[in-house]
Image (cartoon, rainbow, N blue to C red; front, side, top):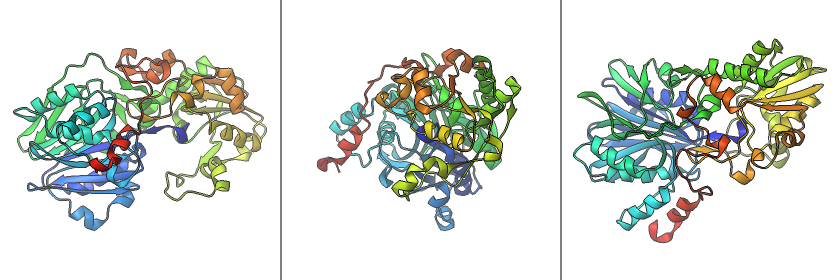
Length: 472
């Protein structure tokens, strides 16, 4: 469910001579705010040096007019963060700025490395120091100190060392780079704007700034943009593709395109598949707003059962650094959702949601609907049961916390208090998306990872290393 599943980050990059690049980057990040709400930052290159500004909090809180005016030049990258590796603190905000063999380098990262500690230990043995506890700084140092005659050769060297998920925008004195890992786990797209070029995690960011989508950065590809034009090279040949299925289910905005698919109709198709796989007699279909609205409409259309808005979402209850007291914390679901008794009372209700992770929030939603008068509550979930943790940039839970890893569907139904519970099958999910199954990472549903991982990775390992006094 929405409160239990978080993506890692959104990245942005632009080369647009004569444009207000800092302001454009600001609005690009604003469109990517859903991908991370802990910190935001922009780095720009004015032809002399890289200027950088980062701040904790939302994009709108991170920048003033004064700060944007001081981020000049023709090149910029931006980042909005939700932490996976590395805790939520100011020093871990991105973009990160490092010095290397080729001068200054600023980097914004979406994803998660599975060999970050190993690489960090190797780099420290070579005399490098680290100021953050993130895997992103490890990536930045690997790129900044990679050998090679140009950035394509250096990227090839770096990408052969890095294991895991990384979609990157990188700012150097030789131009702006976009890099996508060979698995293509996280999205990254290319657009044009007024003769310039833009990179973004999602195409919705291009729409908001008036840019035109050109294509996705291919897995294993590096794209370099500067005054000489744009050049893309396949520097590492992918052995397989492993796009994150949760980008299609929940993470990416429904108005974004991934691999040529607009997500809104794909999510409607997930709801339609749910209606076929798990039909039930009911009076209305509602979705958990906003992530499951499209799927609920799809379920309604396929089943012929009326769609209605049964829950209204308070869109101003987001992530906050001001924590409520314990009484209000216990009422967290009521703070976020308000049920409409006139719609729900006496009705058999089908509730469509994107996922169940720990199973801690769902019972409160079911209880809320029952107190509003719902006669029956039937849960339908767009994601198959989540049985394994993600190691590629999604902060979902440890295996011990995943309710579906230890309980049957009927046991989960009893725990959440629903009258019935149905999960979308993996074949149903693939049919709804309309792309080949072999293109996806489905590890959280199957336990089969696209590359070997240490199943109990300690996400605090880098923080322990960073906190060691002799390394501060």
